[in-house]
Length: 450
Image (cartoon, rainbow, N blue to C red; front, side, top):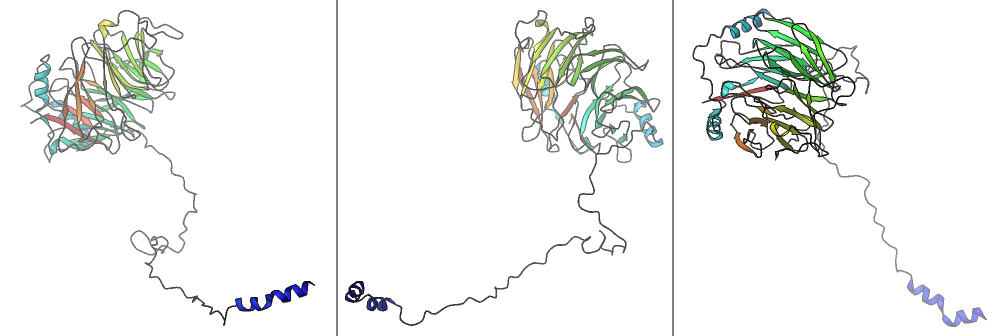
């Protein structure tokens, strides 16, 4: 019955009509690919069996297997030896042969007159010099008004002295290698400026005597890194900060530590002495605090500061003004803070310590490759300090603090076509209208009058 139904539907005839007529043409693609013109691959000279000069490598040459070489950071050994030519240079510096020295800048003038003087500073070709091979971490200016001389220390222990204005026949820069690591602090002697003190991450404090033309080791430790020094008024004794949270009082004549205080749990970037009250100290630390101390009252055990000012991030620097009226701090939270010391007599009830009398927004994000910003007071002008700047075009900035510190404002941005990089360090001369700045390539800039 099923067969009869299929026959009636005539399905076979309909299926035959649906089959395609003829055979489908099959198109086969050629297996040959179109030739592409390729440039010859680059090969190093070593792979080609050649030296860097194009000569054939020796038959016994064997390349190091991949990963066999691991670079290490190596510091050269420090040396306190001074060559004969460098001794002659130091002798010329101490003789002060220059007769036409500049006049000492007027002190205590109005901010307007001070700004007018700053506007006259410029940089010529002789005022820019490559001083060290690596990044500059510290700088100082000799107080002489006859010869403008600066000193800088770099990342790997080099110390350079720069006599500005030397003729092409004279050697304007001499270099030494007294340290095996970062030269973090430099200062000329408070009572004898012919002595240049340097401290380093290598745990050494050394002194270069310009007259005797020789180095002398003042102190050395293997347990700490040193950061910044500051003299006590009318004395060669000084305080120094360290990476382990200690502040030490050093007697360079006796070559020993007179006092040692554990003031922070983390590294202390800077220590500053109030020159009007030499027992008052100010410390800035990685622990995000700035603390004020009375050296007479620091006892054994865990000392308590007179004041503790809490900041948003690490405090890269804090210092008393030369007249002791103000304290300025520089913090990685992008603020400069100023306190009037006359208002710090009573203990503050605020949890974060005494509130600053004024503060200024300032870009302090120097990153990994630039030396951290710090504020440098100008001894010639009350309430004025310099600091580096991330602004473009590149410049250094000068701020001024009013009488009661209720206002801190930008006085001047110093720019010059010969300065095209960030100047992290900017040290004013103690007597002349001169500023020594330095950058992370080891180059120094001397800003002088036209």
